[in-house]
Image 1 (cartoon, each protein chain N blue to C red):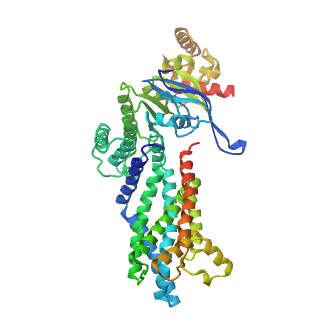
Image 2 (cartoon, each protein chain N blue to C red; image 1 turned 90 degrees about the vertical axis):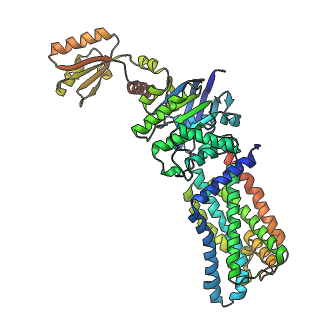
Image 3 (cartoon, rainbow over the protein chains, first blue to last red; image 1 turned 180 degrees about the vertical axis):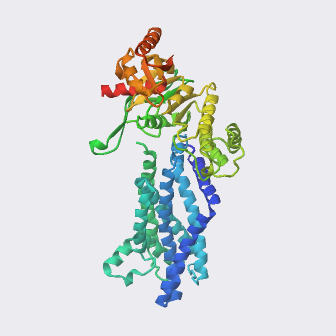
Length: 253
Length: 321
């Protein structure tokens, strides 16, 4: 562990921010995509269910959780692209803190996710979603969502380090969708066949979505899921953070 | 070995593959010593192990076995100490392509733990020194090949490294870009920096390096100054240019050396052969041509080129293997 972890990580974070400044369109696209999904599910599919008002209250927290899960793809893509660029050789041949490359990435991605949450919450409010959980519940829910995103981020970094090549990301992208939808983000497990409902209930993302619904005070929330929404991401982090750092240090072995 | 900037003993590195046929021995017992403050050329064809050697020296790749020291520090157990003292110019630009030149240099300076103001001053100096001062905000991916190489070189000099690795620094550059890089490397020499330079271009090694190690199949097969290498492999040569290419075959038989040592260039109507005694060979060849009635346009003695040295050395390696 180097004494320069923080300064080096900050330098690497600023590198990502400089990338944003140079490619604002990409940033906007990544913010618009979840909004598009929300509108699609809210109006096209929710409209078909003719329970729009109540469904929006169910859907928005689910979409927030889903967006955090899908963030894994972006992280993974960015890390594999970085690994295949020449600049990574320079970073690795310099006396900087090894983990700064990864920590800088995670800080930038967290910032982007926080902005994404703000945008999505704003659109949700415009669609008629009204959280009822009060200020404390609201902040707690946002905290759980970001914690979940942080865990997904390090899962994504580890997957990227294992996959190594951008082509492999496509395979993971295809897998992320069923995992994301095999949750209670969009539909309640009560409406599913028993075995499927059981799978869905155990999906860590469902835990976060249920806890967040509870904290927002909307439909689909159940008491007692907040602890699971804290523990699950921490378990994922405890496994994937050290794996990813070790893997990065071991590049070239 | 305090006066050695680089010391490699018996380095092995094998690349993956569970099946025997997939295993590639990139370094196969390589030994190398580079004296501080010198420019050392590592010459070899594609796949000889040059890039693997540089990546091991720059702590990017761990050797499977052997002892590798850079600036007196072990590249495996003391990688960080090594990283404080080296600069690397790899085969592919090690730059952030999305950012501008100044942004790149400032970022690398910060990662070398220079303060914000110091980093800015250093970036300015380097931009000016490598004639990149007016690139503005243009991202590196819009740079020409020569500009990119110069910026890459500037980035590897952010903290005036003790030892600089240049891995085929001019591959893919046009002649102008090559000249730019050469003059930049020459300007470093004399500043006390040790330079290890890999190249496939014999001319480049001859131009820049004081000593050359010839590498083939993961080993050093010859080592010395350019002059030593030239005299070690056959010494002087005699070139004969004929008026009529049709007589090349007849002329080969007349030369006072075994036919296998003679190279023939039909387009230039040229014969070339190694000789031991210069004057005896010259007069002998001229007399033999006259007696056979073969017209020569030119007969000349010369030192061998590094190309010939290299072909000789790797050819000998094939026989041994």
